[in-house]
Image 1 (cartoon, helix red, strand yellow):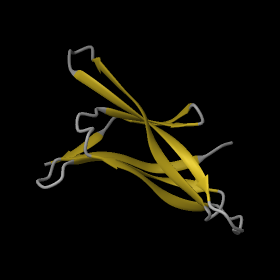
Image 2 (tube, helix red, strand yellow):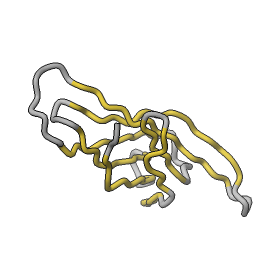
Image 3 (spheres, one colour):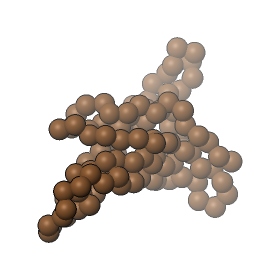
Length: 111
């Protein structure tokens, strides 16, 4: 099954109060009864060629269908992953059905 997504962003929010890491995007789903979700799949720590620490976070995109009848019309829905643990992320991989869907290398950091 093909899936269409857009507007992916990743942010490390270090503002005082409640530091957090979040990824947001938009997913086109088959009908309004489908809800996209991002689930933590894995974290890969390594060292880059320049000696800098690299932390690639992998998120699985899943689609959950609600019970009931829905008009079959393609609907854009927002999807979000957020937690307070992963404040050292340097890239994010979004995976759908075992295939890389999106790679985010530009992580916005706010102070």
